[in-house]
Length: 526
Ligand SMILES: Cc1cc2nc3c(=O)[nH]c(=O)nc-3n(C[C@H](O)[C@H](O)[C@H](O)COP(=O)(O)OP(=O)(O)OC[C@H]3O[C@@H](n4cnc5c(N)ncnc54)[C@H](O)[C@@H]3O)c2cc1C
Image 1 (cartoon, rainbow, N blue to C red):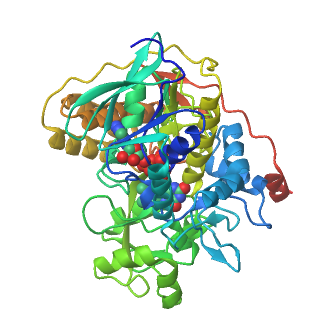
Image 2: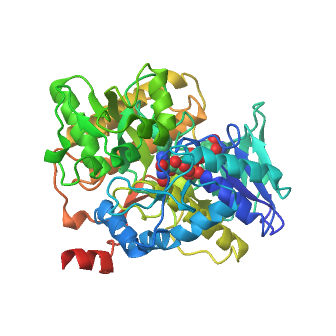
Image 3: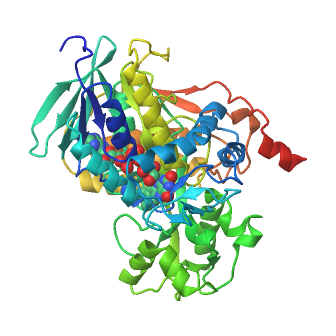
């Protein structure tokens, strides 16, 4: 394969909000091949309930949204990246409306919900709590209708192919197992999250860290891997990916009660049930451990008709387990939910390897800092997809300088994936879960190192990423945002730096500049 030409396609890996939007936008400037390992639209996007945060209300402002984003990010946000997603929020909502996403309205205006750690009602949603499903339906129809986009379903990306230090193609395996290499002028990883690092997760089975693992093997830098956001309230019922009881339910007034029926969040945080996710998740985990028995979510004091009308998906999930969302206490547990870390990328999705983009949850831009504000995930994915499409329309030789590539070794091949994966998940949950400490992290690293490599590609991707995530958790000897160390329970200002990994070696990114004062914070302080 020679040097890629501009006639060669962009290959997009993944068909959630990030891959879908990028493929559609990039098709304006050249051919696109979209490979996606399951059916079109499978992934976390389809499961998103709460919605998309954007300062679209007249009483709200970009500054207030940014203030909340930076506060949640706990000193680790890249302020420019955070400002970019907040600034572009209203435009991205308008763009999704143009793509046919029917967001909920009241009186002709977008209906807005308030979620945890937001100072205003600014979460745009569709179908009540079925926002992601509505997005996927609209994007899937548009992808299928666009003749400039070749969609390959059941096609699994295995390796980013390089030539002379830049991307030249993608090796993938089809549904029939046949492997092939396609030439590409660029590859964009939009492969989603890594919830399958943990046994308790809200993520679908395909969230196996493929994006970061493929990028690392191509020599790209990864970042923020110690930062996994655990959702505090997954439905503690059933097998497989745990159903999410979205923050919006607490936003409407639901309260948390321990096994003795006592409300405990007002003692934990001034915003009580609407406090930051990490605070709520740890409080629930501790209560469950102290008293045994599940913590429950209680909506019995709210209007039953309004509850069922506003949260039809959650009500249906509860009903499937014989529970009435409006009348029964609903058992909940923390679960791995959102990967803040991933492929180090700028706001155009450019990784440190020329021609390799990362967009959506598999990218780490620094916009979320140490903790993602609720509903900023879909927003960041949409902003990154637009940024990447712009970059792809320009000169790809004009690539920002990054650290020299240092590829991780390719995986060997073998058998026994399911057993290895279960052991990996158990090691991560115990050692690199909701709360960590040095002994637990060391034990997890020993267990991970003892596991066989080469069982199957996805388990290998999880192993590569798990090992780096555990090392990163060990390196961050402080508590900050989503990362809580029992043995270092406070933040350490000297560690307010992002940790990147190149070829398995850690690098501290330049200290995160202090956020410029902005109106919302200035007003509050005054
Ligand atoms: C239950 C749940 C609820 C959520 N609710 C919200 C919310 O209300 N608001 C919000 O902002 N965020 C929410 N999030 C987070 C948000 O949904 C995700 O961060 C976002 O949808 C990720 O989009 P994505 O396009 O990056 O990845 P995904 O939507 O996960 O898509 C990844 C795609 O990559 C494909 N893929 C993966 N590996 C490969 C490979 N090797 N080869 C080919 N294809 C591959 C997958 O099949 C899939 O199509 C929620 C997440 C979950 C799990």
